[in-house]
Length: 166
Image (cartoon, rainbow, N blue to C red; front, side):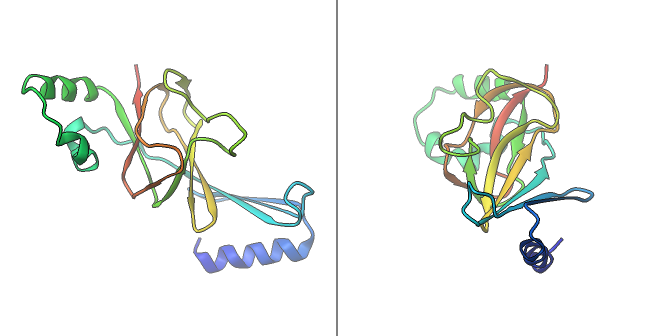
């Protein structure tokens, strides 16, 4: 679904007077909410994009961690850290945008370190072009590490979470 189709859908929903419309396609799920008292007539759009997990070792994430790599390390410490991270699944960003751990500033985070998650659980949202994309897990396991700070910009394919599948 391209941007013009989404814009047309938003206009149609706004004119129809419906308060909420959900559209599910192969790999995209869009929910459009309009005219509620909470939003004072504004339109809110939530787009869910499933995340394909990728298994990567810590050296693959090195370009993202370049400032940390500049710190002096002992040669024995670097391989040990790489071996520890290799057993984890890295959840990466499917889009460019702003990373948010919470659905809104006054709500708790979607997931915390140490929390067990199931396939389909929402891990975070990434805002791109005023659309809030819910990032869902495609694996079950335990959250080991959150690799991005809340409200930070993220790039495509940037590691977001480390998940222990065992």
